[in-house]
Length: 266
Image 1: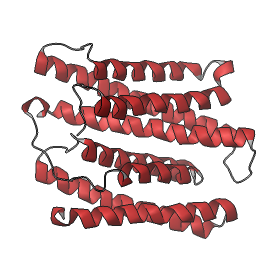
Image 2 (image 1 turned 120 degrees about the vertical axis):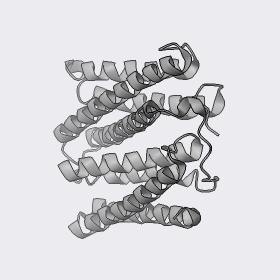
Image 3 (image 1 turned 90 degrees about the vertical axis):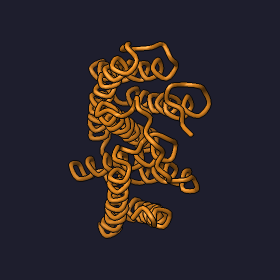
């Protein structure tokens, strides 16, 4: 499978791209057949993406999420997994349109990069690294899902549309995505602290990536509290979801690509 990575990656991208017009047609015509085609395309892409991820993991002997290509690939996989969880549980078909767009941006921006698996540096050779990575990017995916739900909520709030899910439902799903993302990111932070202590002798450093990761954690901890405050419920919470994902993107891509840190992206 690894010998044909470029071809498989293009097929995966094509599957997600095929889902985009199906979601658009489902949104405007609201026929069940278009939704079935859209979800089928997503499931096909996800199955292929999972198989390639497993093959890369077996080949490397560790979870290969250490550079820009591999982190965006895993982020994309986690985002589709998150969407499928919400769609199977709540039938949130309309949000699939926004998820597909984000996913195409994630995958499309790295298709031309070298998918070669780098050698793992000794300090990363620990199960804590795997836990840290899985929880980090699955948490990011939950925050991305909350972002899409927030966008849909605001569209429905200012431009009411019967084709979109009910605002009460959107609010509930947004709060669930934030809560699950916060739990996962908390586990990521705990695993990272223990890993740092074992590798370098301290639990936390004031290095910029660690600092901004803590800011992300504080922001979403605040959001978990804000859902109980009336003035932040609904519209306010949706705007916070958008702002929070901006902080996530800066922490992940902005620092990794533009600044020197302990988590560089190449």
